Length: 349
Ligand code: HEM
Image (cartoon, rainbow, N blue to C red):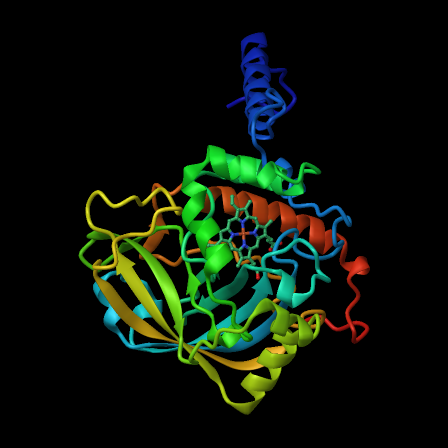
């Protein structure tokens, strides 16, 4: 054994130096320092910045939102697809966030097309299922790099930039059609929320199933024009959901859809054929709404790769890119807490 005061032979020092250089090189590569073209989480997050400036202390996307708590009532049927405890018949606590797909924390509700739902479901075995789903039936782009290009087009001063992007990317068309012609509703409670990304569920026998899932509202969606919604005020969605949940818990059925072999599991612009096997696995119940500044969803990252045992990511490239971008956004916003003051001084949920 080498005594602590003995000097290391030259060969060992060279080996250590080589190891440190390799580690630093790998780190620099991961951070994108060697190639300015390489997409990094920082570049992705910066690309959301609105012309009005970043909303300090807030999420870099889906910046406007409201917290809720409730339960997920599993009916037991999901255990056929995944051994995750969350599908065993029972009730599990939920922390959630209704939100708008915008980087502007003060956007008027009637101006934002995409509405989202962040969820964390906790089970007694100490595991968590985090997810962030949206009301669009498909995503606008097929890869994280193309998403970055779309963000640039959206932020461009050229009024035709998005049209030019869409013309060059035919895969954008189904999302574009929904954005233009899909129904607008007057409530977060009336929206469908879709995972869009695919994941792998692993059942008790070890068999794997590639799935997507949706939350279908118990409330009947009522179509409302954007002109009518604009008259309801800039924050009508938050006011409406707070009142609605205070009156009665709001429910969504969680439906898991299983891919057939050959279905496009790595491309969220492509819906799967409607005849795919779908299983109702339980009900999400929103029981209490809380404003975000002091609420329990403020300082959580609904990272879609935080999955319980019995679920994993698939060949879909988005969840890994999302995880890295959400972590970057989380680090930035939590370090800016003073720019987003709590309403009760000293409150820490
Ligand atoms: C590469 C693609 C994507 C990027 C770069 C991205 C980026 C972001 C960022 C930076 C946040 C804020 C995270 C935080 O501070 O906690 C966010 C939130 C969110 N994203 Fe994404 N996103 C992507 C794809 C998606 C997809 C495919 C969906 C839905 C299927 C989605 C739904 C949401 C929702 C619902 C939230 C709000 C979650 C919350 O309440 O905290 N995103 N996204």
